[in-house]
Image (cartoon, rainbow, N blue to C red):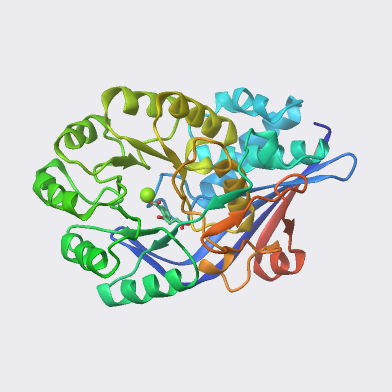
Length: 368
Ligand code: OSB
Ligand code: MG
């Protein structure tokens, strides 16, 4: 791929308002932006989506930097590749660390698409010109959540996801359902329940939710299968799916009826595509999850979500859902609940150098 250099930028930005779940609160976001430059001066961008602390997966910004600097970039320096699909094999000797792998793999995909002067969406097999956008409400109280829902519906979002836990489930969701009888609503529990809560979860069946996301432990496919047999609401898995193999097993066991695909969590676009293709063949709907990300990752998500199996609106909201000013230009916007898939080469958004500079914590440079 003719790579000349790779640059890593660690950035930090406050969220417009804290993102609150039963696992904790995110009020400031650190992230890693990767720029892969080729010998002709073409730049591909990727984003590392691990958080500052390991609350969602075991990775952090610091572990990602370690993996990138000490293992992944040296592997690429030693053995140049000619297509981003070869990255999975190249990185095979490094176990897990999927978000670190995805950070660099997605930069290679953007670079490859730009080298071939085609939109990334088309390069990876995406067909949709517009994708439906969903938004996540993660607030401390019913009142705050209510305010946010009002705002997001006014902004044009057509699908709402709310975070739930045993202290905020049936009364909360039934009140939202009462106010918005026809709104597509989904609930995300981020593993807040155990099988002892089957009756609580069964009670949600009457609320006509699109799905319940990750009700049980992050690593338990068997108990999710037991739960799914007892509730009508489709179970969707997020944390439990970190690879194609996980997706295959979850479908075979009947652990879920829907899968949330996050490029970072599964280690890159390659693995995301494999999961997508497998699910499409078996009639399992997929949708693209979010990581409170900056614009580069958001742009990769848009390309991914243009693939035909992404039939449910993802957690791909506008840049201004989280940021006063994003690091890309133009920013991602949502109109009438839809996001236009860029038709210019690569991810179709430019890095906003001024904003990158304002939010920069430190940077590293590697030559090839
Ligand atoms: O569980 O899907 C999740 C954010 C951070 C970590 C995990 C999750 C989330 C979200 C919001 O639900 C996604 C977004 O809108 O970016
Ligand atoms: Mg989730």
